[in-house]
Length: 273
Image (tube, rainbow, N blue to C red; front, side):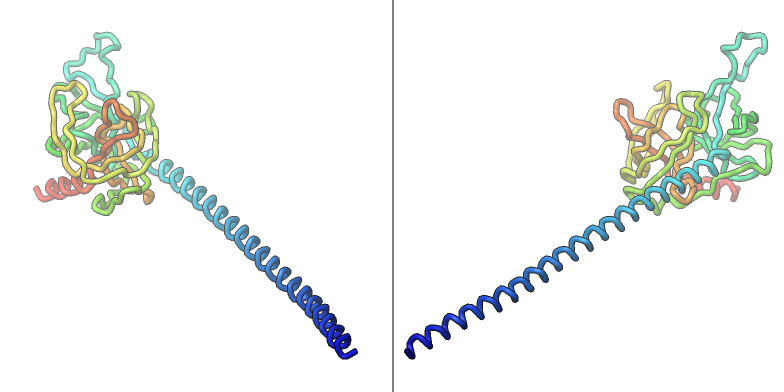
């Protein structure tokens, strides 16, 4: 009889333990499920926040680029050339032709471009603004060793582009290039990043008549085209950090710009003369 009572007690305790274990197990399972669910919801929320932040950043960058192009384009000019011995009786083939780009750096008509764009002393040069106004170039100061030319026209109250600091450019930095591509598509804009700095290349003029080795160039992946030479390379503050200079024949998305600090040094020298 005593053995039966002890056996019943064991059965009761086992059943009770099973009930308690089931209850506790169910509670643990529910807690675990709730924990997983909360973490999943938190992860989804974080992803949504990151996605929203990414979209906002993309939209903000696009708006910035659009604003810079809109504000800077009036200060970007096209350069035309014509034989200095132009005869008005000659056919239209002797009319001025687009040869490159440039940009205004002061409101009184100081303009910068590449020296190779205006290297022919037997030609006369003109600039055309985005508003289709044409001005003859009054003076050209060429610096072939830097492939920079500083031009002046007789005008005032012109829009101009501020000069940045090319010593501060970084690899991967977003940039904007504006110029007259393919000879007649004025104020075309393209974007890219700085691929590298301190590049050295040996470049020749379009006719292949002369070569120059230039150091400390900014390499960009922006799509530069014939006619972009002399146009501005801008940062996202709308400042010129370079002068578009050359593309690499046979390679895509490889272009170069002359650091704007080279120009600033030349302007300082001219102001001291």
